[in-house]
Length: 412
Image (cartoon, rainbow, N blue to C red; front, side):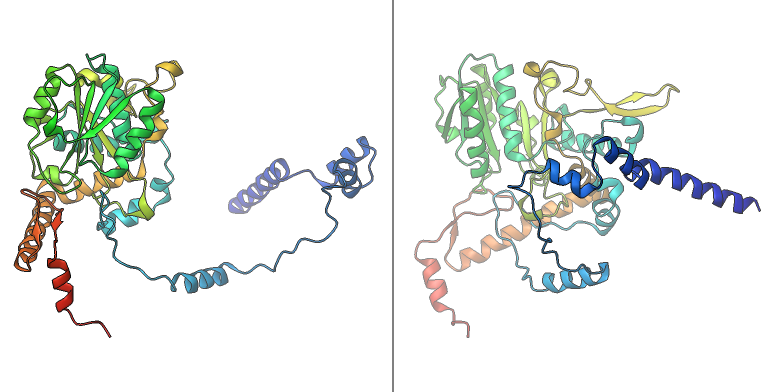
């Protein structure tokens, strides 16, 4: 009997909900039409819609189908796709997303619908995952602090240029960009620099004169060519002129290479896509941006910090206010919504899933396979131009490549 009463109450609540939210009733419609001196909705429509745009013909809408029929048709279309291996390079990599991350985060609406964790009281798990991301980045870059992701690597580079201009002791308007940077990064830097009144110089950092007037320098580590260079002296030389140095570093290479922080860089940026994030038709993929403690007030994006709740328990929240809502627009470093949540969480969980030893095994395997490729190319007369590499080679083919293909039999 008690169960039946509950059921009746539920039905009453549902009826009240429908009455409140699903349009006016027939009685309400007639009352409104009477107030407008109309007898029907069609008469009202004829009075308010101009004849020039009124449509008398029926819409050419085909009959619908069931969900099962729609899925079957979509599957038939999808089966026509041909999936090829991607050779895009340029900072994009095929990766393996661990199944537990794919199923429980990437394919879970509780995670993938996140836009930005404005409400910490209902976002503790998400904020904890983002603070893991920050910790991962500071550990790998050797920096003192990191934000909780940026939109992509090119955007992070442009934001780093703006930070250098704000914090540099130099009054110069010139920003030097390593010609071995990824081409899309260089283009974004140029686009962002123009309205800022910044002059962008692109060239080889090794050729920089000791008296070059700059407010900042961007280096790629390893370079787009795959070359790994020791920038320690270049960094020291530029900083002596009052400029700041940004290093765009491949996140996986930092597992085995010396960190930007230990080389003396002021800011480190890069993409975390290769930490288990699918290519996703080209991104954007969550980038990182890390810097020194002294520049924290000028670090764009959001920062997650650990605080205490009203009961004295640990609680995660957005630190330094929300970086956007409590400061004047002209003083804002950036819009915090240009960051990413889902892909940054996937990257952080990838690091948690594999752990330090697992990441090191992956990085060493990638480097080993690249070295095996280099040896095989040399045996076929194709010489890599790199002196040092992590996972990318630039080849001096000359006529060797033509001879190599000439020896091969045509495919029938």
